[in-house]
Length: 313
Image (tube, rainbow, N blue to C red; front, top):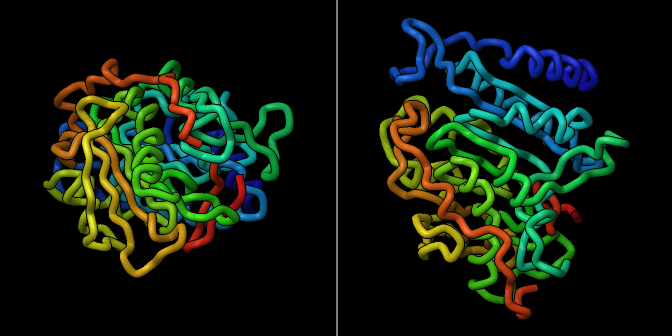
């Protein structure tokens, strides 16, 4: 079944869009066809994560089902077909990106801080595309090669480091500042692609509620994030050190003390609205992001997480 899905995904990728959904958006948008579905591009990617890949594909299919209710331009790319050669062209012009897979962030135990391999996306190795091997394309690859639609939203599902969390076998971040740096760094590369918001949900299966909210509500992405399933009502906010116009927001779980304490985060423009995501009314000032900066020696990726468990990178 999954082999069939993978083959179908490549066919759809070549065509440039996926199967249309069965119902229209509940509110019009500038990118929406008259009386039909939106043409806003939604790309859903599942990278290789060893024995958990099939679980992530199941999550992605649920998300894709929601996306197809609202857009005729849904592209799904699942391991073992999620190579850079397939993913890079598919991402161009996307208004919504959902990525499930390995996360490799900073600060981490894996020195040094180098964004060619950190804070990006873990994909199938081109020479050996299996669910057991991955190649990490870091923030510098995103910034150099990917151009998303103006005001795009990126949703990171199951990534270690993305919300400040550590790998399953590692202790949680020693300080809140380390967690904040991880969120800031993980978002920086995506924010240089034209995206204006990066949402991280490492301990949720991301059932498509964000996509539905973008198409059916009139609110800011921050408001959508603060009313999404799993909201802890424990938000802390700081100005980004990486992106001058961005805020870093953590919604930690006050009832947990392990890595799952850091289970939700967001970075980007807190004023971005759901309408703007689909209409592209203003450009992202992506050139103002600073990439490749040297981290202090005190800064010290992760794998994937699912329903509270993080996997080794």
